[in-house]
Amino acid sequence: MQLDLVIRGGTVVTAGDSVVCDVGIRDGRVAALADRLPGAREEIDATGKLVMPGGVDAHCHIDEPAYRGVKVADDFASGTIAAACGGTTTILSFACQAKGETLRSVVEAHHKKAEGKAVIDYGFHLIVTDPHPGLLGQELPALIEDGYCSLKIFMTYDGYMLEDRQILETLDAARRHNALVMVHAENGHCIHWLSHGLTSEGRHGLENFTKAAPMAVEREATHRAIALAEIVGTEILIVHVSGREAVEQIRWAQARGHKVLAETCPQYLFTTENDIARPGWEGAKFACSPPPRDADNVPVLWRGLADGTFQVFSSDHCPYRADGPGKSHPTEAPRFDHIAVGVPGIETRLPLLFSAGCGGGRLTPQQFVALTATNPARIYGLYPRKGTIAVGGDADIAIWDPDRDVEIRHERLHDAAGYTPYEGMRVRGWPIQTLSRGVSLWRDGRVTAERGRGQFLRRRRPA
Ligand code: URP
Ligand code: ZN
Ligand code: ZN
Image (cartoon, rainbow, N blue to C red; front, side, top):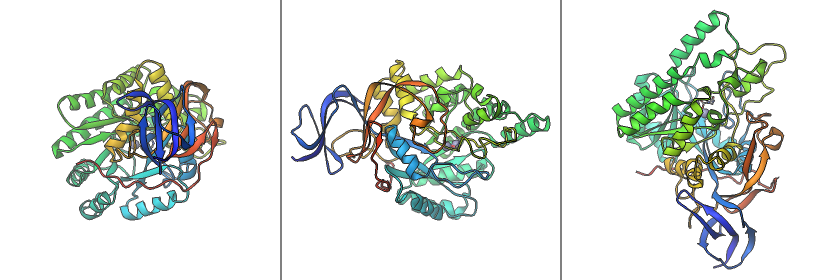
């Protein structure tokens, strides 16, 4: 068998195992795994390195329409290059419906944004903001059939927030057509009421951001989302879980046998509410929804990652420019209720988790792969093409130097946000080469990715 490429002698890590072996690649797919493969047209010596499935980042905001007048900085070129340089080879981003728009037109617009730009493969979740009967009865089922088998709904944010009846109807449509509903679980009415109380007392500083969205707001919405899903009889996935009380709700549901999946993100492990309270505009760089909590919540999330409460670890990459509107202003002081909400993290997601998780003894390498690649691939209908290293699957592979010591600095990263919340943190372990369908995109600090080579992924969830 003539192979195009052999990755030789690395430790191949999957969600199930770690094995020293060669990986043979032909026509963009893994063609053989063996102790010793014959020579190929090209070889990579991976001795002493980890050969892992490329990451699947299931929660990224790329080239979305402006929210409250502010647009994210990354397009599909900068966003996917940054992903690849951090070891990620698949992203799922959002096609977000504005009220009055058809979902189909939104999806088509997002395809145009990605085509000619993306360097890795991508799919789209749908964001449903206007679940009228025509959308739920015809448009959504047709889109699910066409490979968009997941959607996100919001329990907060003006213009996005659904009421309980709408949530029930959306969950039911998703159940009937085998799509997964991702839920942003915060009670928007409570956030409004609390924000109004704070601003009417003249309390506008960023230290009030967390006060307007305390844990109870997330706990209540998490519980309600779980109850609504139970009533409909369907599975949900709670995204960007920030701390203990939401984790307790999820565990309670899982222990009762409800199909509740959950995701957390780097900003909840590596930043806290104190960062949002930093003086001036500095705090705005850390503001996201739900907000990071106090330091006591962090070990609870780590436990949840290790014990299976969380299945998915995503970036929630939402790259507003540090020097742009909502994150800075030359003369005005920031107001907690006017800032742009979201943080970048597509390139640092894997090194941060690997370093503190595997290096810190909190996760095994198998758990790391499961949380960052295999589970999201399974849950979102990409497995076994993506998310593992197995014969027949795409050769999406990140070769890691587990000992590489890196100080995170934005000048070394590739996204367009102009900052990282993790500036100055040191990590041990970084991908030194990333392959997508057998093609090298990033090697030893050099980007070689060809723009537009990324392919759209039609997804179907297992029955
Ligand atoms: O703060 C966040 N999470 N911004 C992105 C939008 C969202 O809710 O995921
Ligand atoms: Zn959200
Ligand atoms: Zn998000």
